[in-house]
Image (cartoon, rainbow over all chains, first blue to last red; front, side, top):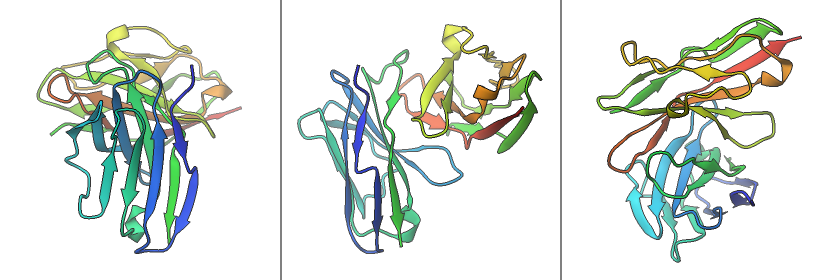
Length: 115
Length: 110
């Protein structure tokens, strides 16, 4: 079974520039998550989709971050404009659904450095 | 709000010695608890969950609701256990969000 795919793996941008990350979940997984992991911290949920609808985006900084999952399959996370504190690993994950008992599978992450 | 605390950022243990990684949580409901592991240059992956009550790679974890703890244990550490370990809590209602602790880096000394 193919895992969660993410691209790009690494990105370096200057502050105030924009960046976009792409995620393709495991086939058939209805739930897709974007997590932000800052160095030395655990992953923090940014947004959770169930199919193409948003379930939770309470911790997404909506003034600069946006995410979409238009056809209920792959997803894009965008940051515009980027700040220095956005330097982190952005993890995409998926699960068959958001109900208890379902394992969440993570991608390898997209490493962002803002200079 | 739910919270997961892993008090040790770093833990070094000699090969063959017992390992215990601590995890405490705060949550008003009845949560589901997990341990995730990240080996060097690999993706974050599920190690075990409390509802399965199973042993994976020799690791076990018991949910203690009285002490709100979910410590990860292994009686005899192996070099391949060196990794980053994250305790996580999942709500059992609403969107069932997964909340992670800050992680413990376990190093097994040969």
